[in-house]
Length: 110
Image (cartoon, rainbow, N blue to C red; front, side, top):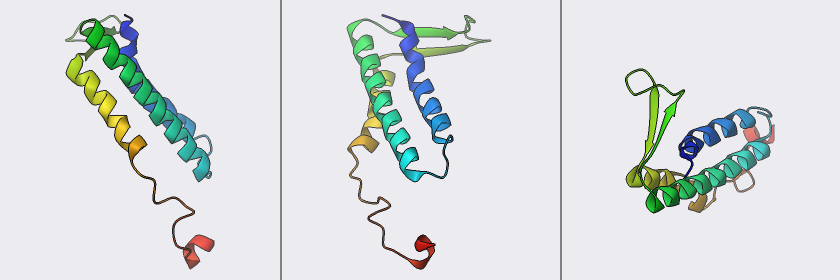
């Protein structure tokens, strides 16, 4: 399969963070961008895990340089499974503390 899948678990959170900074005053926008980024990260991680399980270990040499001088990203079964487990927890976590559910205080009303 395509070894460029390895870079997705790095790029998706980075792009989500950049998009979250576009409108820093809008908490709803930031929550939406964060959740969409988390779901995309989970889907990319599952896709990476399935690709590694079906085929073999994937290696991506960033910039074409080898290990001592360049960055080498490697995805085996364990690392791909761990990238799938990381975004799965916040997605399944119960959302109890949203802005609407917090108690109203004098500081929040200002």
